[in-house]
Image (cartoon, rainbow, N blue to C red; front, side, top):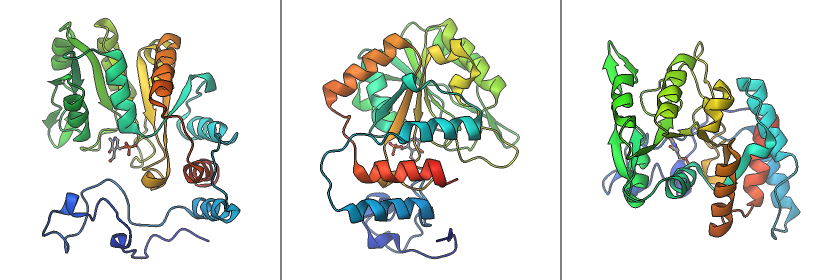
Length: 287
Ligand SMILES: Cc1ncc(COP(=O)(O)O)c(C=O)c1O
């Protein structure tokens, strides 16, 4: 099998979200669907083979995580992004949005403020609303066709004792900015100064234009990592959003323990056989 990027596949043949009336509207049957960040080409051939192999096994009882999965992730992060992650810092989570919601619920209190930098992925707002956290917007600055962060604004908002967390989108969806090391360092310094926990959604980290390098927030150094929760997933990189789970990198021991306890309390630690097969194949053979 080889990658096929030019075959037109009817997403309406399955209950795809992007072609559903929830997204396209009641009269949207003929619209071109671009309202959800997933792609219309096949998953990588190794992912398809792994799924076929797993299906052929034919038994789908409870499973543990495959031993290869975490090394597959850490090798990927080291090789592609130069980020060496301690395996002890890695937790699992069903998906990124769930991770953001859990982080808000365990590391902030009702009516605390969470900073976001609009325009940003709309679900950030939903999570804040549904968790009764206050939205603290620090809009990005648009100048000469390029977006940047408003650090003066961030400093002002972060200095409010009610500001406890920031949802960073790194790289930023939408606007497509791949935040530089300098930008992330400045943000990290401001957040550390005012005790604002950085929750960094890095789901789009693998997808950058040539010449732009994704910097994992926690790769800035131990002090930055200590004040961060990093949300990772292969969903976008390999177009497997409906067939994968997510990872959470929590370097701070105390916070990791709290996160793990919450995962246990919510029993969100089950393994999906197809997600395991797809993710492992994607990271090991899908590059
Ligand atoms: C920035 C960002 N975060 C999170 C998600 C959703 O991630 P998940 O499906 O793992 O919850 C998306 C999907 O479009 C996204 O663009």
